[in-house]
View 1 (tube, one colour):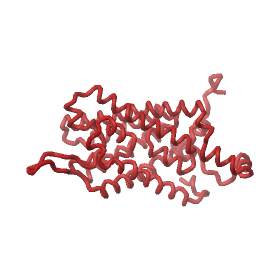
View 2 (cartoon, rainbow, N blue to C red; view 1 turned 90 degrees about the horizontal axis):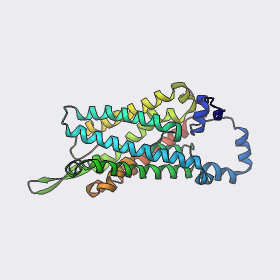
View 3 (tube, rainbow, N blue to C red; view 1 turned 135 degrees about the horizontal axis):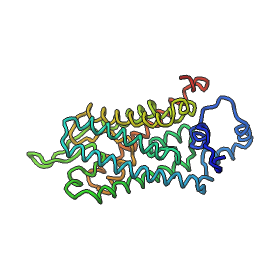
View 4 (cartoon, helix red, strand yellow; view 1 turned 90 degrees about the vertical axis):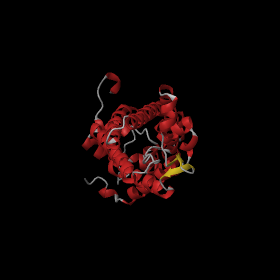
Length: 303
């Protein structure tokens, strides 16, 4: 029907983008797959056929470009907010980040489902909404996009800004001149790790879950979901940068691809404890997946 210009209903669009409901009654397809467990494992879990799917690679291109624009925009916001020396830089930065994230989600959602974040993709994998192959392709595309976004930013800023603000990258600590030589300032490793875990889980629990549940997504609406995702992410950035209020710590990364880009392009101290921005969100995703598994299926769609 779409081929002759008829607009598909919203439920069909969500279904195509892997936003699936949790069904308590097996469908005919599921019954067939139960008879062929090996085929089910290959098609649903591994998704090997998606490695050769043009649709998946097109979606990954959207993820790559979306993440590149996201990294360029967010890091530009971080640098410009700090450089202008506003009285409330954390608040201004959080509001702008919320707006940018919402716009980019709306731009990429029809093509790829609007992940543009390894946290979302990994959570979708753990909850059974995407296959291992699709998740691997998406995370690779997001990582490359993060690097391209950082390269684009490096190309338009002068060396002084790049050096002073580290391309807006994710930092746990930084080295500053001290009375007795260089001094390391920032957040303790355990504190930074816990912030990543908690903020990642809250992000998934408070907003992404609505996109994962097709009925909620249809009831709330695509635009509103993207706006909510942006607002929640902006709030978490604000909270993580104000609660700690520690120089040297750049706040919760909440997107490993965004942290990877500047680290690859700029290097140096951005690699210091960089693992936190991957390991913390991964733990948060596992916790979210366990939470989802514990919800009785008959209550999944209770609002």
